[in-house]
Image 1 (cartoon, rainbow, N blue to C red):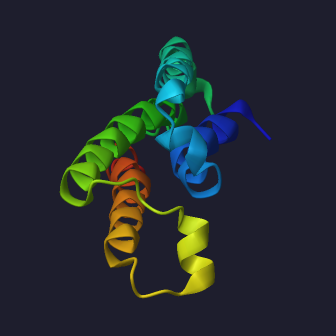
Image 2 (spheres, rainbow, N blue to C red):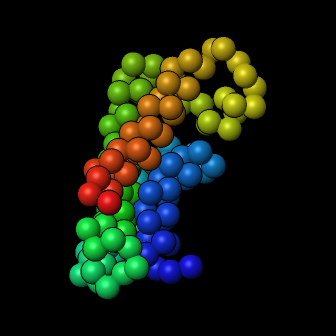
Length: 134
């Protein structure tokens, strides 16, 4: 796998998969600084590699290294969503794995939270960063 493909996949899927499969890390307040440090390092790595995209096998208008900024945007979006979720319901969302394995109808707002976050964090960057991909 090339570094371009790895940066595309890691940048796009790091925060959503962490939320789905390791939500304790996202909801724990002790790991907020660590998670922001990791995504800032990825964003700096994307900045250092941004000039090498013109030599890539992709279209010259498409820069896969820009997707390394997506975890930062996704984490900020997640923190905003969590703030409003806690403001309205006074609790953290139930982990997604528990919702989809139980099929309980009492988790409507939790399902809406996860669905909205996934759509905005996965489709949003693709539309914004890959819109000029011919």
